[in-house]
Length: 400
Ligand SMILES: *Cc1c(COP(=O)(O)O)cnc(C)c1O
Image 1 (tube, helix red, strand yellow):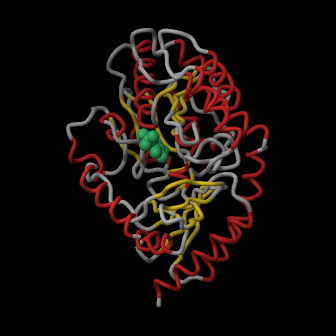
Image 2 (cartoon, helix red, strand yellow):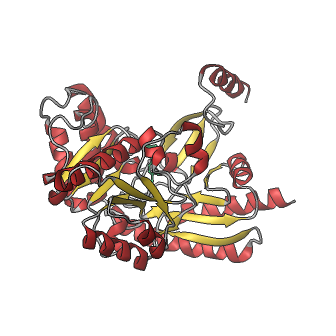
Image 3 (cartoon, helix red, strand yellow):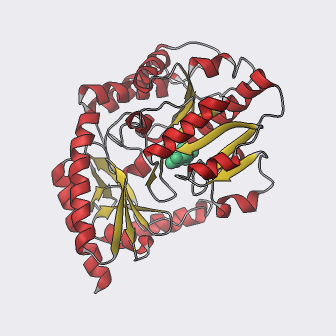
């Protein structure tokens, strides 16, 4: 414990205090377990915030990265490279979109999506049709643009003035979205399943209603699947379970399984009237290293039938969580799809997460009263059982 304390002290002296971190220094990971610098084992049901879909140390994944490190890391977007071409083709195939732009993060994917939507509207209708409708309790990232469309005043207020032309509506309330539409609306942005805000899946009638509204008025539907996409729900992207299709899609988090990469994707119809040479760019974005990572991730998803696995183990997780909600007075509801689940708790979620960590379980919170369960997609039923046991111990330790 003593050297862990030393590391933590050093961290608090050097790093900007922008996070309240849990008191643990992780050293390495294997499978779905993390190990701290004292060798203590933790079952990981957070996956680095829905990033490490393949868990830790996956052979095929790390081998692909190592080979690319030895070959070529970066060239800039002034040139073509094979890994990025392959990654793009594979990502378009699984997302059923037509064009992709790779970024370095989810936030940047949102920035790109907003710019793409505004440019589309500008090309087709001229200036003045620029409004974006975003949802209350949404989360889209921390840059000035992404914060501007994040429906949480606490995240926005200190940084005002933000970008203009943003209106907020209530998620899962079609009338509220309709009321926010004006003749200046160019796009409607939402997460298919709100993550950070507390794990709220879009109701099918809501999402289908918004889609119909968008088609009627040539408003672009932007779905942020940075957290809920990449197989977490058992579909490659959550919207694929709703029978609708977005005009613009954002991805990140599990897209690179640990390598910093995001993407915004669009249909050909949007691309034709949107960003052109000179409108947008990135130095790192889509370099051959991340291309190799994304390409390997998508190959592994296919080879291992990850989506079918998520459907199976996700159903098991739901059943075990429902049992737990029945049993525990401090849990009032479960929400979610597949391996993206939230438990509504009457105990402060931060307190549960800290105590769980002591018990060798990593889980995180969402919103002010939700325990968020976003494990690696490769977990098995035995890991679900182990998580439930650890969570039960955690609750009894807190309630005693
Ligand atoms: C995490 C997240 C983002 C921001 O992604 P970063 O990679 O942290 O910039 C945006 N939207 C959603 C839905 C997210 O979960």
